[in-house]
Image (cartoon, rainbow, N blue to C red; front, top):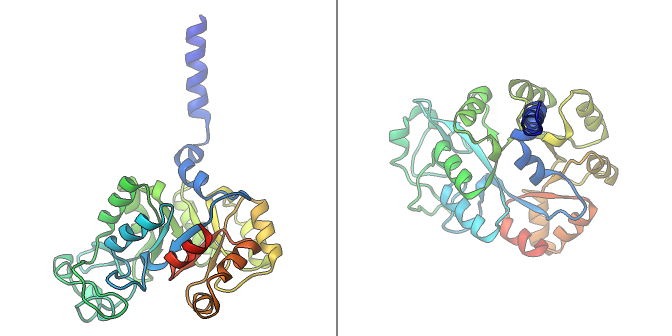
Length: 285
């Protein structure tokens, strides 16, 4: 065998013997792997909320926040219309965030798209309920990352299959609330990237037992601070730690000073899941 043929054969074997998940998931693994000098990541709760003129779970809001925070992560809620179209919506009902009324699953998407979104102050905007398909398209084009929160009324496997078909797995982190759910989703697609709830050492030990690779997860450590030893153990595994400041901790920072985000960062927090993404970013950039 001449030298050129041998080189081609070796390249072929290297390509197809390499673990598929490392090839498929490299963008997410690189972006969300822990290192001490890694830039902090701001996760905009419900795609961004609390800003006048910008509703939650709204594509235009995400575009606005990304223009201010280039590496923002967008947590979005997935609901479903009567005719099976996947859309962004947190509540089961329409009153709080749109000009509509009643349950979202009583309407077809054609009916839903006639409604307008309202911001957190009850002001009607010119923005519409977005389809997940359109948000995924934007995320791929803009290299934006999405954190997918699937509502209980929506089948998780269906959402996973839809994102697979849209070839958007590289843009998506799937939120799970139990280790059982995390294991099930991983079994459905071993290239998946997951947000796993690990709030204490006991949950960390249980996570270690279920067989999901550490480089395919980030750890949601809860909405209050955990013992520093937990952050150290997760970091040793290369896992980023998320603190949910949304709610009480955001309110505390708003009342006592945004410098608190710097203090929480020093404790070992890598990702802030927040209702105040612009304020957090201004402190930590």
